[in-house]
Image 1 (tube, rainbow, N blue to C red):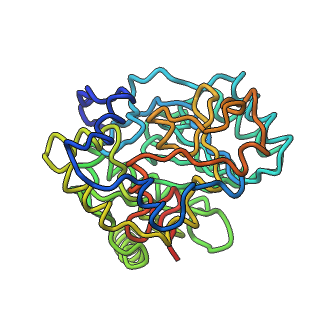
Image 2 (tube, rainbow, N blue to C red):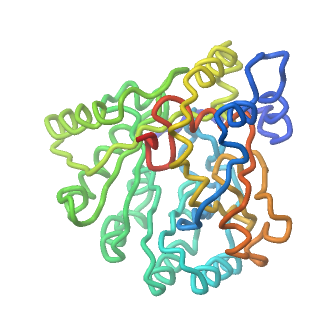
Length: 348
């Protein structure tokens, strides 16, 4: 499988990214804080910590154009077993029931399988964000569908389109073909073929500078096309808005779409999306153990607000449960239209 050429990313520095997002010379839109104040929703606060989303490393076998993690084969940031043990200690002494493992390609962490096994011993529900192609990347990954099944893991995988051309343009040459093969392997062990068991969910990201269409309508279309053409079944489709950070911010600026995209996000601000934002019930953990309100804040190096609970070693559930969420202009991406989270639309 050929990957996309690694993009030159002069904007990968978090301070530079934040400066662009906050630069009023580039756009004159109201600040996200002002929108919340006007809607009587400020300050934005968490109301629970139900999900621990853990980034186990930025190494990936792909270099996707929209990747907000800036992941790729050249990334060296990998969570150590010592940091994983801190995660396990937090899980063992808290009421958190869901663990969401992400990357990069989380399976490329050398301790991934050990970590999954230890989490299951704590009776937690595990989500793995699998890019699908990792299953075909090397023989040592070919048994991942069986491993996932043995540990009753919910698999969430990105598939930008049910067509080869659009998928490969966003994620790299050969990705669509390998993704189809991987989905068929997951179906073969029982994933996605029942509503009650072995959940297989797909993620759609727009290929350009626009918002996702209706998630419900898109799911129907994906299910029809994938089953008709490849015999593939899955449970749910999550439509996720592209966040104006990292490689996607590069794309917006290089194509002259940045200001118009931000305008779309601001104009589509939906107060009804606030209630179910993922930052309100999730803590994001970086590969080195630091804590963030969400995966996007993690990439912008915006740590959680409680100064005495910013690392796994100082984890305090009471501090984090009612914390004030750190907000910036990129938060418009999660509150535009039907809203967006790692689980798709959020507005009721």
